[in-house]
Length: 118
Image (cartoon, rainbow, N blue to C red; front, side, top):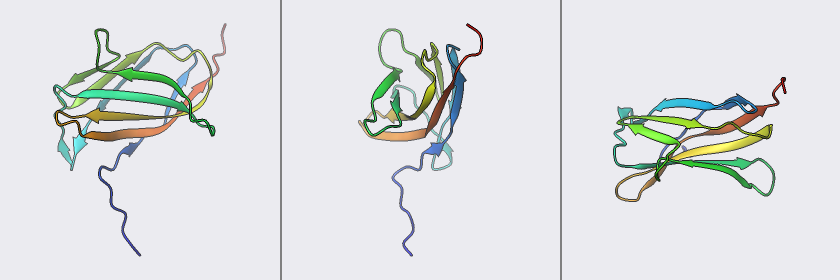
């Protein structure tokens, strides 16, 4: 039996939000079990449909003039407007370091539950 070899083993974290609610999350990041300083790096989150088309429905980034993701040394903080459509999606969060190496640090399912009040 061959062992699995990972460039980076991303954490699998499933997220669940209520339709229309503001998203406010923080993640602390370690690489090789050591606090990972992400200062000056770019972080991108991509949310896709879970169907055969794998369509991108939302992207968030630490880049730009009004970033949805902020970095505080080894912690990333994500704040975004909520999803207008309920459904089941998949996402990943990637860090692009200063040498253009891209590491997927978190991935999983993203579930948007239909809001009960209108």
